[in-house]
Length: 496
Ligand code: UD1
Ligand code: CA
View 1 (cartoon, rainbow, N blue to C red):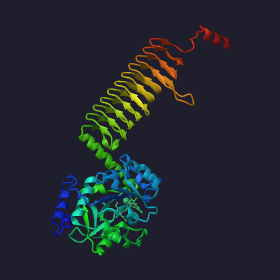
View 2: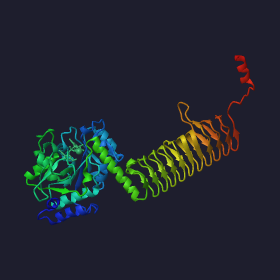
View 3: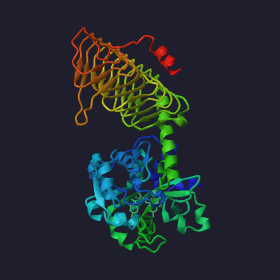
View 4: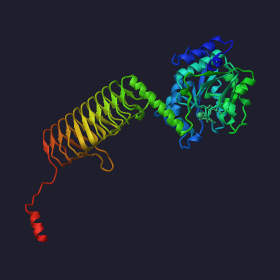
């Protein structure tokens, strides 16, 4: 059935392109169109996402650690330059714009959201300078530049007015169905799930929501769209029938990689897409030489980089722009965001870190909390229930137990005893603590910043240090011990 559909009578090159797409999904983006052909990408992102029941606009919901829309933009800008990409925004337009503005694309405002067809109606002016427009759905994040490129090439080769990307899904429920002319690439119409007859619902070839239009043909005929449907909206899908009736060519290009078209309309669909992306990421890392035990439990964002021979244990989250060196071990229940970790680092269970920098051979945890600006030196140790913020801990220095180190510069070979606290905050301002190389801080020391402990100096346990300590000295800042011999014995005699 698939084979016969894919044959386009009298259109040799197109027919073979289609078959090639089936066989080798990674065969590159094909030939780029002639330079004189001006192609834009429009991403429909104005909808509210009613089915998510959310305050957050649909396209800002995240999968794989990034908003849906950002994934689509990333694919788009690999096909045309960012200056030719237009996101159509409407519901919470400012919020959506702010979230993806850094990508350098353009925005079109669809102030009222009256359907996918209406999204293109309001884009007329923005697209007037182009010959063709690739239309993408802002809620379908798995689309790849390769597939978009193939769709565009098929459209240009077929000289179609409208080309839609279709996919054959095991479960087509919820998607529009493609009604083809039997045995051809030509499309008669797209019928939405809600309007489909029981017979049509059995069609497994769905409309992906990705299209290419000839701009002239689109806007010469878009006035024919009407709102005579269950949602009283302008459906872009109706353009198939409109253009066919205007005797324009409407064709479908069936993707060989149906998973790419999945949309995140519901929380369950978002979870499904997220899981697929995470697993794909884990597989890629494993191919690159990283060991991941029980990958289904790991949450690793798309941009995370990990060098070979690092071992990731179950239930680890590696987020944002995290980079991990070779030969590390990340034990269970660590949550690491936007951090750089050198080679051969051991991170024991339960560590939380954000915006931290850990040098080679360091040992962390269990249960260390590295807050932004923590720089842990080569071979340094940070142990259980140690919190750090905006500090430098020098090479080979150790803070192994129950400690807070904030706004501090700590040299090499320093030993920080259990329960040490840098008192960095006076209620208004933050102050700095400096601990020079080789210093030894006794347990239960409070260092009242600003304060400096000199090179090689010792601080007696339980000291409260308020004044600078010169190099090579001993400082003790605590009440002297008083012993009252026989006191307890006398007390009990009195009680009797
Ligand atoms: C749409 C298609 C359906 C297809 C499916 C694929 C229509 C009528 N139906 O259905 O055939 O199988 O995609 O995923 O197009 N949007 C706007 N402005 C609006 C309305 C929507 O920009 O006024 C945006 C949404 O934010 C979304 C995209 O368009 O990113 C698609 O809209 P959505 O409501 O999700 O369409 P589907 O019901 O999924
Ligand atoms: Ca959708």
